[in-house]
Image (cartoon, rainbow, N blue to C red; front, side):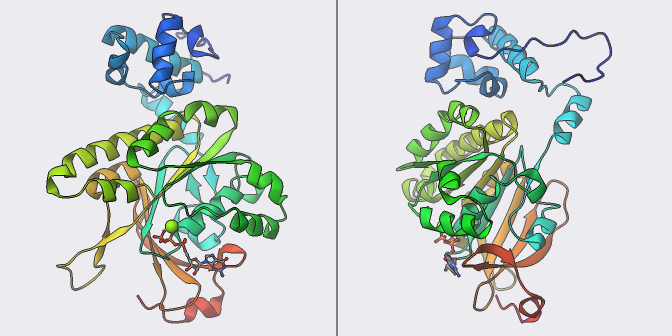
Length: 336
Ligand code: GTP
Ligand code: MG
């Protein structure tokens, strides 16, 4: 990219492979790969501390990371560069204009969007729809990209993708081929899959990374108060990895999350998402989904976003997928 940078900075060198970076010999490259850094992009998102286990000194790690960042044109040092990164944010349509409106035009790349809600509220259906939509061209709200789908509850259904793809006039076989699917059996396996994902993301032009559900394994494996701290620490690390991938590859990241009842709440929402503050703080955009009193109608509430106001919108889940509700449907009482 020929940006008007002023003359003080020479153009950054571009490196295609890790081994091409100065200071990375075959042995270091292998260690980095074992730790999940297969690409210049993912190294650019690492911190010096994360590279310590590879036996790389802090000073050397800083230099390597800087070089990798410069190579992919990302640096977090200057505010104008941050702004430049912001400007490259793309948006992906959810399939519902109302829901897109709530999110200021669709789901953003470079951040995580979390959908949380009760059983049957539509979290996985939205994930399925996004798998199809991301493959659309930009003029139809897509990103012309592929999907990495980490499924922790074995709820991904190819048939559902096929019917959604047909409805949008896409070739279902092609759409299915562009979804790279991985089932995660435990929370460690789930983390492992993401740690190994960078190469797959790069090679397949993945523009959407889904983890459905982010918290289910963590919730069932880390039980009781004494395990809470280690659970949160792991979740934090996992989310950090995800955000790094979303930034490095300008991809949309989506996670789903179940809710827990708040026994002491009598008014307002008596549920809250699993994972507490760590998931909340790193999520960037959180959307709470709930069913209307009956039928296909769902209510989406934007609960937190770095810059958008809270709000509520209605959409529906039909045979076709995620769609806007009709005016009649919107006018009916929503229930809780
Ligand atoms: P959990 O993962 O159990 O927490 O729930 P979830 O929020 O992921 O729910 P999910 O997205 O799986 O929503 C399931 C609901 O979507 C069903 O109860 C149906 O109402 C609706 N749904 C799913 N598939 C279809 C379909 O093919 N046709 C129609 N009309 N509705 C569907
Ligand atoms: Mg689900």
